[in-house]
Image (cartoon, rainbow, N blue to C red):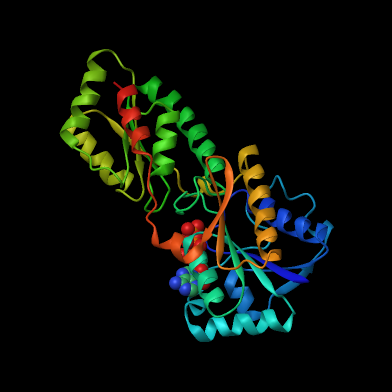
Length: 319
Ligand code: ATP
């Protein structure tokens, strides 16, 4: 293999730049050329492709977003669309592709591989919802952004003695809600993976109020219910003045944390190693702090699971 490509696809996440940098530098270090494909699979279909040099990825390791930009395109879900992409890759003499993105992007990478074009997936999404890896690139940064926001809301919640419902991202996964809720001592964490009982939540909030708590923080995962509708239910059940805060897209931006930069660097470099070793249709990940790789198709069939012990712990600690 003498020339590989790299693209970012789907939702962006902090640390994607560090992953691109790792792919480019590791490839050049291994004496192979790297081409950047701009705007994900949409750019691939159009041939929006450019050679990247060592300097192309300078000064990006600390930046959020993705220097290759990202996009979503329905056309890539069709065989004709994917064939256009393969034609472009062949035209540029690119022999293997690193796809950085979420599970949708992994489906695209899987299908390209099934059509005979070697791809490796690198998990980049703030949702932490990809099976086969304990963490995805961007999750830690988003988590810290959420914690920072909750800390600030906590100050005003205390001053006004109010209940705050905070809606966090995560798509269908509750990881961001669970980890931020535990890290911020939320009274209640509402995640799609666990049913909730409004009577029990209301009783818990009232008990806290009776023993003199100045405020209550409730973290709700977007995949479970909207913060607004949950806030209404809380107010009805407790009669406490309740405010809702939807954190939204601030969770997707910002400088990647050290943890995300290190993870992205390790995973990006490993993806290049796999391509050079003749592997294809694999995804890289980290499990128990060791780099791993799995068959993408098999990984996509697994269900993402959440750490229910952590959920239990969050309840035990928020008495
Ligand atoms: P995030 O989880 O952050 O939203 P994602 O990678 O899951 O990221 P998607 O929008 O689901 O984001 O997928 C990105 C792109 O991957 C799609 O726009 C499409 O081009 C391609 N893609 C998604 N699913 C498939 C599929 N089943 N077959 C081929 N390509 C796909």
